Length: 442
Image 1 (tube, rainbow, N blue to C red):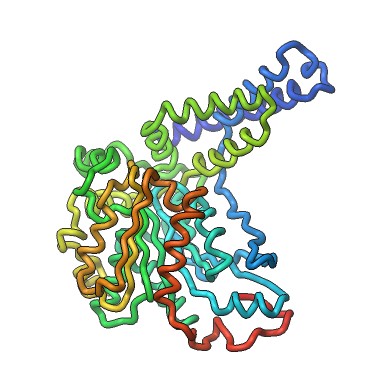
Image 2: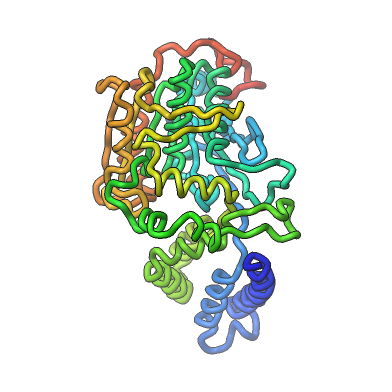
């Protein structure tokens, strides 16, 4: 019922937001009668802010069209590599007709970036991907808004997430020989589970795995997010946060944790900061500071775009990761595709290098929560393990922004390079010699 009420309210607010946008343009144009009135710029700024507060935010685009490698511009083509009901594996294919550049591109390591399924879209990692592209073949998990997945596609559980990750890794191994895996925040847990299960079965595991700001062991330095998950019963979460998708969407009838409720939670964590940000946006518009205003718009275009999560996945994550702490306790059993329980044993991982990255001031995954993977993965030689903490950084600073690009990324890049074989085997995804310009891509 709440979802239906929200949709009705959204329809009204959106129409008001469109009107506000129109008046903002009229007052902001000095050629119009309204634009010549006293305080027209201030009025235009007010309407622009109202438009931003009321508009609907759709799924953003990655929008990565080119990157630069050693002064040479490399074209980027985004394409779907694999598609499953709840996720697409995206590839950022790189193109160049410069032979030397192409040879460098083909020798680069393959990196699978596992994006969070925790409210925002994978585009939240746009800066992560763009920074890595000049020196890596990058793939990313692009999770689907659950309200767009028909009931006929079945349910989506936490163990399904684990199997998706495993399938994506195996696909890249088949194509390139092997790969490196980078997980950011929420997926650190299912990624570690997927690689652990592969190791236990005796399968080839990735060359390296990087865990960034994730809730491996939420008993360490618990945050507000952790406390919320433990202070309420699972029944409370189901009664208060789970609703059915309205009829207007392809996923009508699917039980989900709606994106609009998640967004409310995001804002509630730092209401003063968001209020100040919008006030600053209003003042920037009055002053005519378009650069600062555009920075605000880009951030909130991403931040305000949210997706629904399948209820089974969400509730199982709350219970397994935050309430039971099953991974660090060694009590987590994942259902295999055949329906048989398999114990997650990180200690079975022997040949995959491990890098853990934390932000000193992370208020989502507290200090030590990600580092816990170092102890769990006791089978990995110490020479293949590394831990890094970014001083003075919060959660987003470890994978986005200036310090990600100048401090964190060099650590990640060098770690991957250290554990990348010198000679990549020739497969369907690589070649010993550059192809002709007509197929100059990597």
